[in-house]
Image (cartoon, one colour):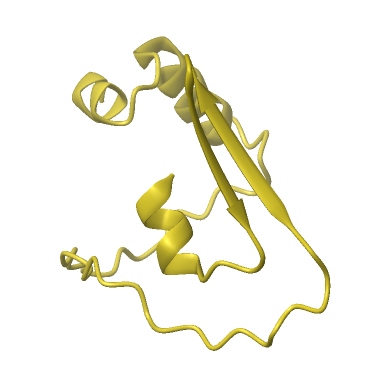
Length: 86
């Protein structure tokens, strides 16, 4: 149980306490006939889907300043541009 807690960056004592509270029925009735289902974790693709944005009718501006460097984006940039810049 401590390995599971460590993997999920949770204090092991907290996981033990949650387990004890569950067994005491503090989260509702304890279901002894619970069935676990097999799970397969797959790596998700990193490509973002193309999003069609309607043309914005308002003016927008994003300003990023780091030290003496300034970046200003005006208008309605698409999500891929914002992701690349930020």
